[in-house]
Image (cartoon, rainbow, N blue to C red; front, side):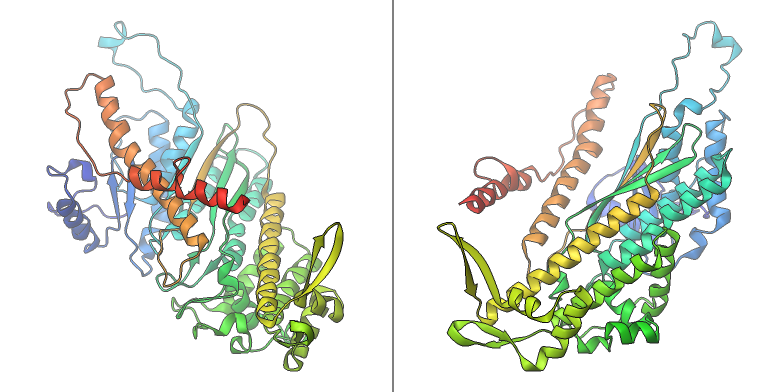
Length: 497
């Protein structure tokens, strides 16, 4: 178990501070961080500071087992169980135990007061949700993985039957991470492994705590990254992993070359991750994960073939044609040939799809020629759509492998929300607007949970208390969503015109 802080200048729970202001809180967090205590509690909330380096001693099997044993003691009704230091494991364990509260053993009451005590109320279980939020680069994805690994471990100790089947389920649930990271994460200026989508992971359990399965719901994949990246950033990991880890036969079949050879990868001048992770090793992990999830060789080949096709599609360029239209340039004929072959369409059909569009005029279909600039927009739109559809297919395929059918009303779940962090780029699109709006809503929920709801509970329990004012972002959220003059309702209205 992590060593507790012995310094009198640090506290494990910020609610114990005499003065609760920004300066005091920051000093307390800094004092803990300088001693390698990256976790600090704030009541029921855990604050985690990204150390930007491995701290393996915090996540050993011995540490994990200590938190599991602590949870077991509490669940069995042991008295005077010492508190454990703040940790992501503690959050996950609390959620797991509260989900199974009907399995707890009540502590035996004192004989002196037993006669005066009312009949014991039943222990009530409830489904749990863990929200992992923070700005981009704060370590949300890693924390989510830590929580999932802990829940997988604690559920394995609860398994009393069909151990091999349960172990297979756990492996598949955990092996979904490398696939989601390969296809949904990218290097940004602030984070070498930034999630470019949001996800809600629902882990289903039996009443005894055994893991039944899971489902994954994703939100708002960042499409624009596929065709454009800022300086020092990368496209999605899977492209570099494929180029670095493909076998000689795969490289020949898919027409692979160095990352600098592909327009969708060479715009930012950044080809490598800077966190020590090798793309070739990650490629092997991704392929292994796909196999673990039950994807056969044909499915894996189709996925990688589509990834390669998108790279070649990005190299298709256009020259001006007759009548204000465009044609595929002679210099990019090889790229067109590779893209069409990998997509399974003939070259003329693909070329026509990129350089023309069909519209309905008076009930008749009319073909309109596209200028080279508009053909590029069409090409990028096709690439973004192909990748988004591939990502959705992979998520659906993962869900097929790990899903479960609830058996009865006694089944319960723990939900984990891993949402993208607040971000500001040199060029921001509608995607950044939606991402930041989602974070503002989460901040509003956080403020309500920490300050407003807690103080109302004091009033309900007749605790002498004067309400503390706190800063909130209600005006910012109202600017986005109020009807009819909020920004999002106005955008909806304009889109319908």
